[in-house]
Amino acid sequence: MNQTYSARMTGDMLLKKEMEYVLREKLQGKSIEQIKRTIIEENVFQYRTKETLNRVLRTIFDRIQYIDDELAYVFLHGVRQDVYAILLFSFLMANRLPREFVMEVVRYHYINQKRVITDGVINAFFERKEEESEDVRNWNIATKKKVRQVLLRILVECQLLKKEEQEWRITPILISQRLRELVKKDDTKRLLLKFVLDE
Image (tube, rainbow, N blue to C red; front, side, top):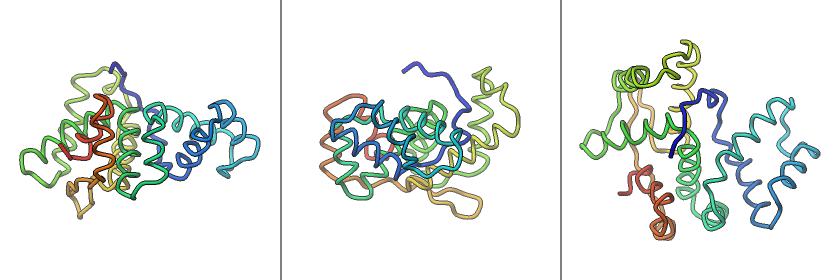
């Protein structure tokens, strides 16, 4: 997967309800263009500005490209942990830096029996990315701070991390056997198991 580091995620949210709407419409056979048109014309999501709506739509459609019909069905009809796992999967697949954070920090710590991530560990990750990437190095201080905030907030909302004062406790997402078996059939979807700390 060849993605650049992007600071576009500074405005990202979990977007659970919005993703649910789009995936339901998609499973009913509507095209992406039909869904977009309906959302915009009927102001389905009730955003105040067109700029915000366009940003949200871009984020949603970046993410849903990683959710096929089988995953969409589980998202719409599965248990809560499966929904969070699929939200996390789509967020991480669409965003290189958060994906690397989960694989290089969260997963690494969990595998090595370290259940807590400190500010120092998070800072070290961002410093390492600055050394590795001119894109990250060129972000201003406010952008770096916002990327970090959004990343941690979404991981907490997806229940992979739990905030405890100045630390984050790693909490694997306990997915259903149904979702586990589904994602095992495809190498890309199988990454979901690594992201939720299931394998």
